[in-house]
Length: 278
Ligand code: SAM
Image (tube, rainbow, N blue to C red):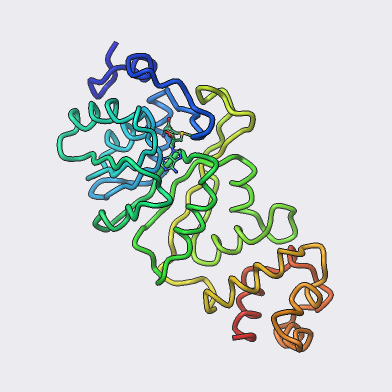
């Protein structure tokens, strides 16, 4: 039976185009169109928005994004075997789907889109964190995108939303929460994917704030946070020593005990320290 968009069910698409999943490309496909529509809805109202999707694969989420009203979807896919299936979707939604065959780490896809822009993807796990860090560290803020709605391994999702004092709290949490509202929007068990991965997954929604939550120079903050969490078990006076010989004075000046460990310092605390060191 054809789906709501008149296209074949995804199991058929996969069979017709011979899309056996490749582990090297992180291919764990979503074949339930109700689920992909639900994920697309986590991105908010897509009407009038351009959407960047990384790794469309056979196009389940792509179809969800188009059905939910995206003005245009630009999909970057590394696996050429998926292109015929994506071309069929483009035919069903004339003028609304553009596909770039390539590596998302090498293509400057955002330059092809017009704001307002949402980024939504069931990311290949091997490149997911690197893409997230790039999207979170543009040359200027606010970024060109309004929101990121991204599937990650549950453990990575938890690192993004982690609060100080927890094991998952680290560089990713500070980077994300400094300039975005973040939340886990959905949890997905391995069985939601074909083939099922070894771990559970979660969709994280990040909305860019118009300006950073606390003032700080991005480069200085990044240096402080990287040094602090690089040796997260050490006291800050030791892990940050290389940043300044007077690090104890600087920590005291912003009210952080020099004996404190990185995982207990709030985003606000790291920003205060970055301002002090700038
Ligand atoms: N979006 C599809 C879905 O939800 O069913 C597929 C998701 S699958 C987890 C990841 C997809 O990303 C695969 O289609 C894979 O070929 C693609 N991919 C892997 N590495 C990539 C890269 N560096 N750039 C672009 N696409 C990539």
